[in-house]
Length: 556
Image 1 (cartoon, rainbow, N blue to C red):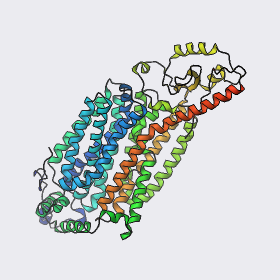
Image 2: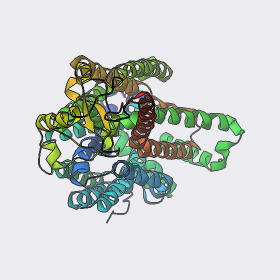
Image 3: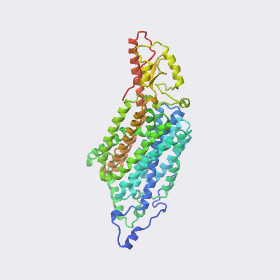
């Protein structure tokens, strides 16, 4: 059970009265230099652990999915649901989270979210079915959405104005550090039996420790004023600011709360104070954050990297770890320099570099003959144990060298059409003829052996991906949220942030829920072109033996 808000907190970690020391020395510090003591910093860091947990849960599924799809034989849609169920919970919580933190307090909401995270993780560890897995992911989604809202509000309300941007940015930094930890965990347990359970379980101790630590922190002064506890709010401010006189700041809090009552939610869509234009700017920024494909990179990094030539789970997880490292390295300078460079400059630079890296990645992938229908195919442990697997077509079969030789014997026994490619031709192209389980028994698909993908193209594809992630981390990653906090008046900022946050989770859900399906649609286009090709081949064939069938890939 989450404890009720204690107006003054448990009374631990009381800072020294530095104001008295300043008076004794006869040289009090300037007002701007005061108010950000060690207690404020420790409180902000403790709350920002929520960001670490959020980042870990967001990046964790990238590696866990590689094992879960094999263990539970998940289809494309089921894999998408495993990923997106977290976002369903997050979307639901974003719609009601603002009401909860206003009624029960920011500190209580963070404690509740930490406990819910532990509960959801236990469900995932004990899950033996697809349905239970979905329930656990939804619980974690509710947790991370609630903690995201409560943490940002809590830090903003306990931080002094001149340090608010820096302390709030701790949450963003902790998120990317959490993503890095998740990718490292994915790599560490990639080849461990039931490694996905260890991945899900590692977060539990952190959640428990944060819940305990948050219990010993005070509520935010603003929340106490909202509830009419002005004297308690003044005491908390004195502890946080390490000064004896907080009358001015307390007056400012009461004034801003009065301003909130001047606005309603529907004022966001009216012309009053140019609010309609402001909310459109905010929603557009959030829209671009999601449609750039960042959710796909975050949730499906290992899956995508495996499709471009990193054949084992371990190799794909290790490559995706580079994504986490780049996010951390890129976020740190963006956080420190934004006040000097400006968020607009970072946005322009970031989006330009993202566009260039995506063009490069597209050109590289055009030169990698790969079948994207593999990326959502569950594979049996038998197939995984083969020394050299070749994935092909909708049937998701695999074959080793001995099997391929037997297949070639059967194929070459048929008469060859002069328009069909010969074995020598296909050997030069690095492809193999294999039967397609969903076509007629006599029909075959030409597929690519992943080992034939040039190493240069594999690493160029990875480099383009990392540049894309770096550009996102300095531009569309943190900057839209900073702009959103600046363009709305304080009286309506909370409701504007709630609306944009809900849209953020909603678009994220839509993209993640359709990513594998969209890539798998290439399979339908693949079969359509194959059927047309088959008819053309029969029309020009003298003996009408459809021994082989060309397989074309659709590019999107």
